[in-house]
Image 1 (cartoon, one colour):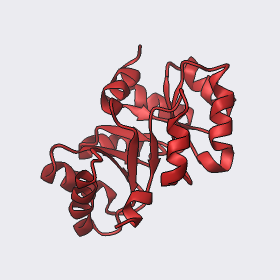
Image 2 (spheres, rainbow, N blue to C red):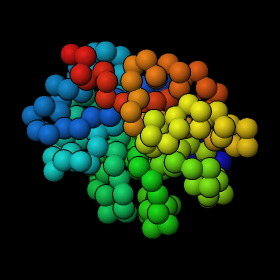
Image 3 (cartoon, helix red, strand yellow):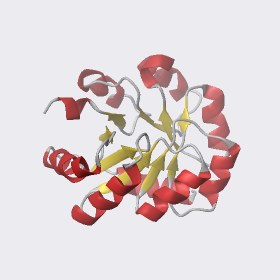
Image 4 (cartoon, rainbow, N blue to C red):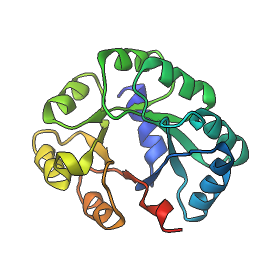
Length: 190
């Protein structure tokens, strides 16, 4: 089993829902993370969709040491290295490229690469990955796609994101090949 797989088994043990955070102002990072931790979420994904994302990760890690902080929307090796240097425990990508997979081989931070087809899942399985992100989950077939993938690819585990709601999360989590789901619905409830 590869380093990537062992790390995700440890990180995601007991974690079924991962809040996906878009932080627009670094001053909101720690309060947002504390609120989510108070709701029982210990694994947090901060997306690289804003200029302050890496600073937000650093602040959350410094202020809330019990949080397991990862970085999302990683699309290249430079971002992967920056995530590692910011202290992120894992990285998530909406897809994958050969260059990103090569960078992941050389970095001690585990990568959860995204897929949306059986061919992409098979390619990553051949590269040694067992944990994958299904993205954008709802747009590419959601639960129906994951049910279909389970037959031929029973050794792969998915974290679907993209359009997941509190209600649909339950449906996803009932599937044998779904280890967790990612979403932002829990932040709009407050």
